[in-house]
Image 1 (cartoon, rainbow, N blue to C red):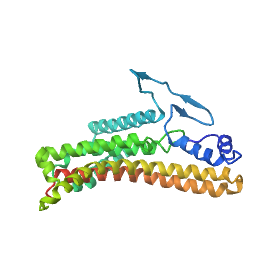
Image 2: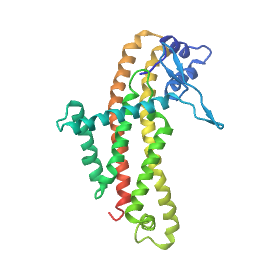
Image 3: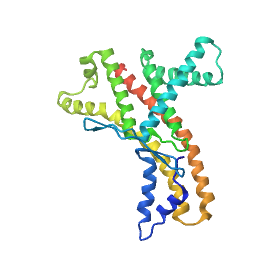
Image 4: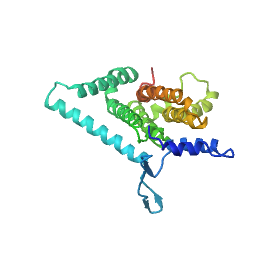
Amino acid sequence: MYTDSTKAIADSLTTPHGQGASQGSDWILHHIMDGNYLDFSPIGKIYLPEIEVMGFNISITRHVVFLWLAAILLAFLLIKTARRYKKTNIPNRFTGAIEVLIYFVKDEIAKPSIGGGYEKFVPYLLTAFFFILFANFLGLVPFSATVTSNISVTATLAIATFSVTQWGGMRKNGVFGYFKGLIPHGIPVFLLPIMIVVEILGLFTKPFALAMRLFANMTAGHIVIYALIGLIFTMNTIAVAPVSVGMALAIYMLEILVAMLQAYIFTMLSAVFIGMAVHQDH
């Protein structure tokens, strides 16, 4: 994980006059939140250029850098896999692993969750799954940043799912038929105003839940790891180091599972929401 030097952590956690607690939390947030630098502590920091166009700040931040890196790695590896299959149908270990994941998303997520016509949505689901997976694993590399712990990134992914869901529902049922299908059959007339409001809110609460779930889970693990490491300096004794580091390592191993699980959950829920919009009569 990307961390400050031991001295910097110790200084922030042992500040006198009751200031240590607040600064102790500050150093954790410093690593979780975005910034205009790449942190290679204790070696140093590389500050990124600030860019402003027509009064809008479009500066490159470290989350943007690792967002691009995840996208580049994803494109490179999947294009390499596709070219391998064009040359020969015999996969190697890497392309075989990618193929397993592709068929998993296609046959175990898209097909049972969406049903008929699921093929149209497989490209989006594969893109979302692999991007989140790559971004999550990239965040576990030392000196990196977890872009899926940025609410702007998870919100953008959720908006993409929302857009695909609405497009799929309207394409299959028509614009009027889609919105008409949101209201359950047999509802009394006097309940229609309430149900219309509830269903419209439901359209937006689903992507909101997607964004918050991914954001919260990827942020929580990192906070716990930093907090466990910080116990060494908060208690000001090396005696707790074996327990603190051991527990932090256990949480780190759990983060590997969470990284895969969150990619699966986001893709699964996206497929479920798409299936509900496309097949409203089921």
